[in-house]
Amino acid sequence: MAAASKIEPDLTTSELIEVRRSDVHGLGVFAAKRIPKGARIIEYVGERVSHDEADRRYEEKDANDSHTFLFIVDSKTVIDAGVDGNDARFFNHSCDPNCESTVAKRRVYIEAIRDIAAGTELTYDYQIQREDDDPDNIDDVFACRCGFPQCRGTMLWPTERKPKKAKKTGKKKAKTVAKKASKTAAKKTAKTAAKKTAKTAAKGKSATGKRSSAGRNKGAAKSKRATPKNKKSKRGGRSR
Image 1 (cartoon, one colour):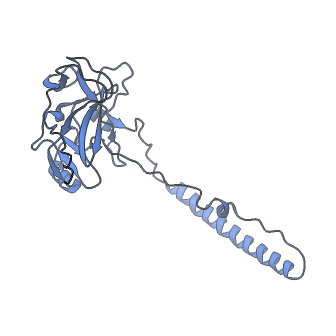
Image 2 (image 1 turned 180 degrees about the vertical axis):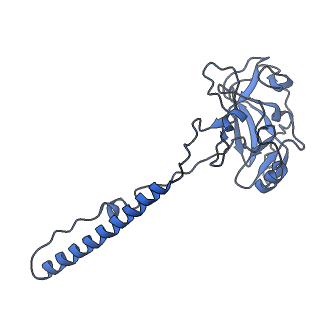
Image 3 (image 1 turned 30 degrees about the vertical axis):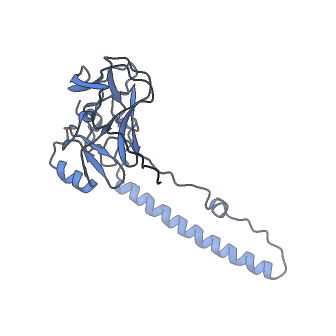
């Protein structure tokens, strides 16, 4: 007799939580009873759409409004809890969270990372990913006011934004052209010297060659991949 397939528990609702007004922001999620560390509390559900569709839905949204309920599942799928969502969409962000979001089999869950007493608000770190084209006021739009003494002040991650590269001026361009010209001249000189060395060696005189540093280091550098799984999409997030 074939073994019965394991049935995933339905966590679209949860007796562990209740939704009510929050001092952090709007509605929040609170523990209805004691929740032990490691407990899987609720699944984050809503309509599953592509990233392009998520962009289309919110393309006319005010750039200063961070209020939507989008959650990235993977490179292909986004959950829009604004459509058929559940209580999981009301979890607020905190820089000192007692929960975390996890992805298992392309489903998103909220789990407790420590023991939580009844009546405590449940939070997790949104860690909204920064983008190269973020506006200058992006940290204000996604400001955090969780009240934690060491609050980093933003729901964005990494905490520090990359400095924007300054545009090259006419003088800088001129310097760049001069550098290129000098490099070209140096290459020609090097080639001429190399030819002379080769001729000398061919005549019986020894020449010691050095392997270039580029040759030694080739393949040593490894590409770094960002892994933004379990992160709240900046196209969504929560308004503060």
